[in-house]
Length: 285
Image (cartoon, rainbow, N blue to C red; front, side, top):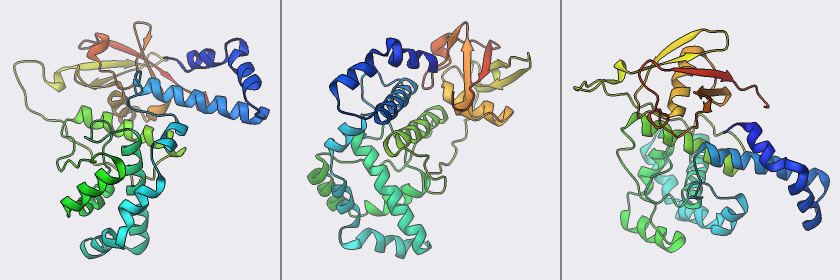
């Protein structure tokens, strides 16, 4: 979907704005800011293919769903977790405090998105170390999860080994953070380790045998090794490595259709050596 489509969807005939003016006692500046936030929220919904509302929740619904104090209590009860970090990890006091804040934010996202089994979000490396220390007392961890959240936030020690799914989860985690907290996550606390793509070959075409060609408006073409099961956001990351364009400034068009993050290349019927057109999205547009 194009950004202009979402703009048109919201601002067509100013009907929505008029409804807000009529139904809510808001100032003009508050109405405009709310419409901008609504557009950003819809853009995230489309980017994550969240058609059924299983990934993102509107901010007011998130606040109603859980209490901030519950997560604070879950992490800081008796300072047990902080003492484990001090004993097990050679971190400075400021790093411990920042890691605990990041861990609290991660758990807040997990609860808000009902991601009990880790199918949506991926724990960044530093947060994962804190989480590992938190679950040492498995019985107490499980009991407190059930009491506070009505469910257990399950921990997966192996992370995500599939490179394509790993990339997709990283993208969803960062987008969910932006949607919830209104800012970019800190690269220090929210950094992710890359998963190397397997080099094993089979009778079918290997990853190195499947290439797509990215064509800029100048006619310049860049060939990138992919796999039909790889997602569009993974392609953006690889294209950034080649040409330097940040993923959020990339748009790909194939046979007149814009490719959506989260969808695989195979979903669009893209085959080996097909040409995908690249259009740079200008900042602020």
